[in-house]
Image (tube, rainbow, N blue to C red; front, side):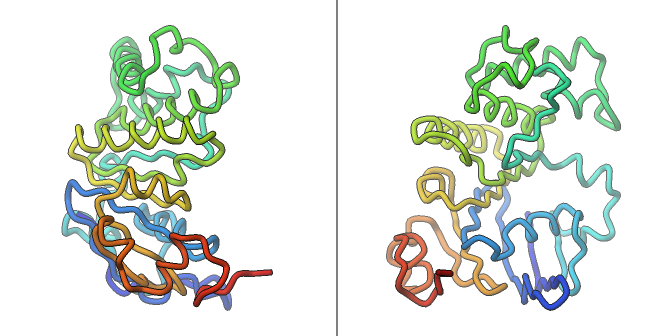
Length: 248
């Protein structure tokens, strides 16, 4: 579904991506791991066309993203942002239905609201949440609303950017389980970037570790603990000593 070929991206003298090759199969959940500043977000933004790579090719469903019609291309994606990114001035249902009330996906207001309430139920929230504002919700509820927005338009591909940031361990577990359940039920192709190894083990079918601008290791999540790769072993076990230099 998604194929990256020889992707390079630099910002001045900082070479963030230095030849990334990666394939994500249709209907699979790929989790990208790696230290802070290794380029995970740059990779995600490059696929969405928010950043233009210096070199390389990105194919989505066999089509070069640079040749795609932007509106039709982006309509295939859903996105759960790291900080939720809800609009403070809009009630919950309008946050969820934001995309459904604009552009090529535009629906009548009543229909968009009904879809929003159905998606709220899908993430375990009651319909009375629909008319509240984000500031009236807990962090966990806001994250669920953000997840409902990500799936509102039934996207083929969903990106999750650090989905459990700022949540306590119990709510993180709830969100991880919800993401896994929704991705499986929808048959969507998913890409998640995260530092949270609990999320990795819950959400992933496959994982890829990004280090020094390249994919250091990739494979099924079940092979991660016996990968034989020193970099991934150090990262998943949180060891200070190893080939990945800790900044002191």
